[in-house]
Image 1 (cartoon, rainbow, N blue to C red):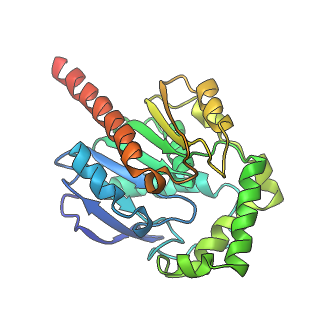
Image 2 (cartoon, rainbow, N blue to C red):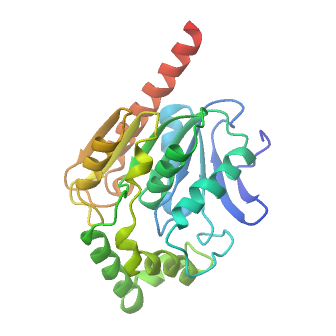
Length: 271
């Protein structure tokens, strides 16, 4: 789909998804597909996608999942396996619809979990690597505690007002995220099994002070993955490295992207 506009809505049949496309299209260069956090959307990435496109020369495709931004509303309550549904149903349709040919999945928080599930469920040779920013592989106590605090800030503080400018239906976005994570069943949520089936290099970027996850998340990837796992643990950074430490995050991500994609190009040339 080389005719992708710079921004618009992508019709995937059961859902219509808001997107932005920066730089060369998928038929012209590798594409970085960015998957946002649990309360994120296209707009909440700020200018990080633009800077990533400039630093790597890749095209960057950013989209809002169902329930977020201007995309179709989600049906609530979401099921426990909603991230698996995204990885196994929505993401494959999206990659095919945009004409994805080769590139890297770049996910943050929930988006990182979805990227990991996808790579562990699909032998998709178009995907050359994963960048997982503040990923979740299990639900830790600190995760549930921080989401409970966010729930209180949404109901009694200014969080709803701050999110409202990014989401067409802010209650659908917030409830669709917080309510499932705070459900009792979610303490059993665990995607570490999928990690063993990932066959591409991974970069994990995490803040040392991440309030939603500890270094246990990194340890699980190192224990379960058979693929190379690079780690950038950033001091003084919490759950959103791209916003809190954009320069160092950009450097780590762009260095990894360039190395992985150049390695593939060199291997292809040698063959």
